[in-house]
Amino acid sequence: MKKVILLSLLFIGLAQVSFSQEKRVLTLEEVIQLARQNSRSAKRAQTQRTLGYWSYNVYKSQLKPQLLLRGTLPNYTNRSIPVPQPDGTIDFVSVNQNNSTLGLGLEQILPWTNTTVSFESNLARFDNFSDDNKYYQGDPVGVSITQPLFTVNQFKWDKKTEPLRYEQSKRSYVQDMEQASQTAANLFFRLLVEQKNLQIALQNAQKNDTVFKVEQGRYNIGTSTEDQLLQTELDLLTSRSDAQQAQLDVQSLSLELRNFIGLTENVDLELIAPMEVAVFDIDYETALQYAKDNRAEYLDFQLQRLEAQRNVATARASRFNASISASYGFSSLQKDNLGEVYMSEFNAPGSLFRLNFNVPILDGGRNKARMNEAYERQKLTEFTVDQSMITFEQEISNAVRNFKQIIEQIELAKKSEEIALKRFEITNGRYLAGKVDILTLTNARSGKDQAIRSYVSALQQYWDAYYELRTLTLYDFKDGVLLYNELLEYDPKTDSIIEKAKQ
Image (tube, rainbow, N blue to C red; front, side, top):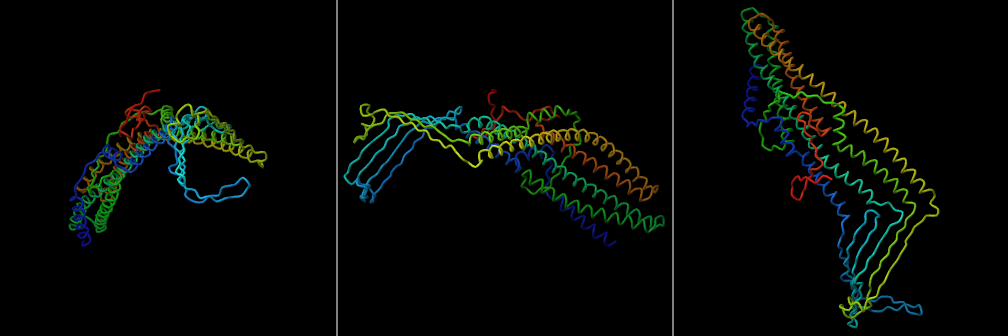
């Protein structure tokens, strides 16, 4: 009896501490919204989306002309330097001079041929401080062309891969946000299950306290046995112990959920379960098509194949290495005045042509081995992608089949809960009237508790499967809404979503 009184005091104290804190009532939709706004997963997804945006802009900027200013200012020397003489000897001559260069050029890469074309104007100034003289020389205008030969045109491949990578980053953002929603829903129902367990434990403790008092009265008048009295006392102690453990579990999961959705205030969360669920059919072929159209992984399959093809092309091009450089323009003679450098009568046309090449004669079979390695890696990539696509399709199939089974389970769990609750109320009334024994009441209570837990678990499975399907297909089958729109893209400069023109 002393144990019962002590545990009762502890139980009451625990309940008072729990009820003294401020409460915040949250629905599943509100929890998911907070997760999409505040969770670390959402922040990471937003950062990766912005990174994808700027990476794609780096690629596009390489295709635009660049205005470049080059120079060496100053290049000052004040020391003795070796000067070769006509007879082959070396004289060390003390010099005090500066040699500066400055060039302004407009450079454009032609991605179709990997050709670099530039228009430049260069100026050089030489100062000899020993005799206080200065000279100018310049190339007022000139055009240069550089053309690599036999090498892989990276811009040709980037034109295929970079738009796919950018599209992949946009799809990954939507997937990551849906994954955050799924995680939030999972944490929501984990806490909800423990709150239901706590509610059941509190109700059982109250019921067991009543039953224990009833059995005490019956034992005192001789209508109950001592073993029945001890059993009711044991049930009371167990239910109060379960309530304490459930309270600790609620506090732990509540902290985990608050941290995930970004709630910093120390409040008790009261969750409202979405008791009604939407029932709708999902066709596997339709779900698979949405997944292929919207998932980032499907673009990754294309990128893996393109990268393998690029590696083969790179290995093939590595057999030879050559480039052509040519330039044509006007060049001035050495002048004392800067203005004379840009006067036409002091300029003459000049040109330059250079062919660089590197052709191995004997390479020990290196090129052949490099080509075979690239081919085998391409074959391995094809096998890997084919297997990944099979796994991809199986994942969609399992998700659709699992969702259909969960719909049936929810209907059964709801019906079972209604029957178990009704059975317990009837059995509890018959027990208080003395028509059934304590074992029958205990069985009815256990059946009721299990039915409540099973229904909440079925709800958890439903919403987890629902958000899994959204993540896998980027389509909301419940509302018939496409979650991804390729025409919408994030602009970090204005922190807004803009709609681009459809090509």
